[in-house]
Length: 296
Image (cartoon, rainbow, N blue to C red; front, top):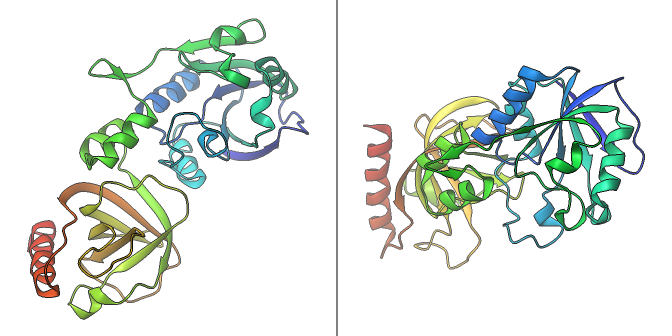
């Protein structure tokens, strides 16, 4: 899959004719995956997916949370496995969001789009006035039905809500893959080392949705190598009076070797974050958590 960066102010066609899947695809959840697979099945031309480099909620108020389920790299990794030829990345700003739906359609024409695949709830252009029917006058358009779970459509916002409730297994089911946050390692305060449970601390690469504060069974990838781990997301109320959340992971086979890239994949919610009366009580609880997660 080839990445194509697009400046909407200066568009030039990259291929003669193009089949295009439209959407933001945060999370690349089961609904997104179905849309992509249907497009791959019916596309008559080289197939591209169009996504944005920022969430619209990070630029204007939409009533949705600005935090994301996937970074651009995360999205690329999932989509690259689904048979798409081109990954078109639109660089957007507030001016872009003021384009009318007809102006957006003109941009697609300049890209030699001949065929479009969209979900039936797709909206675009200023004030969201464009809809799938708006595209049918200009392109061969296939409108894909929504994928539902228990009668409700699968949406990125619903998955975010599940994560914030600590319902990791339900969120992972709707994602079609385990929720993951990526970034780089940073130094912590060394408390874990002092009490016998050294941790790797994660500096997030993106404004990810933070799961409910608590302890989780996870897989931590150090430069791509997986390690079973136990991860705490929260503000460490027993030892810290601050309110800045941290993501700290203790690995089953702790390795002091440096890693340049760290990813945390969430498997299961163990317990909520608790304030203990002493470090000894905290240590006893962590020991219990570790035995439970690592099945020692």
